[in-house]
Image 1 (cartoon, helix red, strand yellow):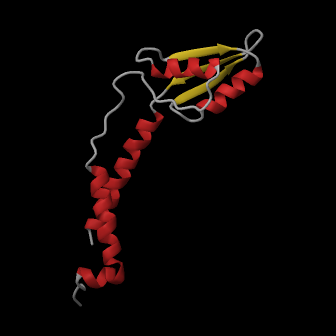
Image 2 (cartoon, rainbow, N blue to C red; image 1 turned 135 degrees about the vertical axis):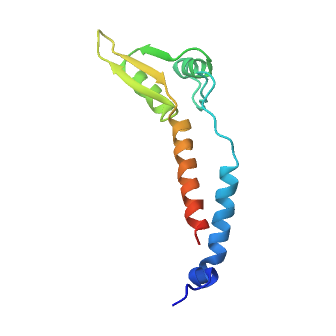
Length: 129
């Protein structure tokens, strides 16, 4: 028994596979790099003093940690404003008021690297057809 031609294997899905391959190739053309310094993006609609301090911290090329010693409602506000934007959040329960420590990380860069690896695997799998 002979192997059917590639067109017959994919049948009506061939145009979709071609489109997906083109999209993956375009994504893989982007060169990835780790952040060269500690700068991180931060966009917030809030203009309060605490959020302004976070913005300054996130824009700093050298500062890796920032601590806010404040009442719970202020700490929670900053936590919600920061969201998941490349910072680890930790509440330090020493003394009163407690403190919120933000530490910059490379989570979004790590996600892009993982996506890139999945894209490479997907395009390799599609190329097998």
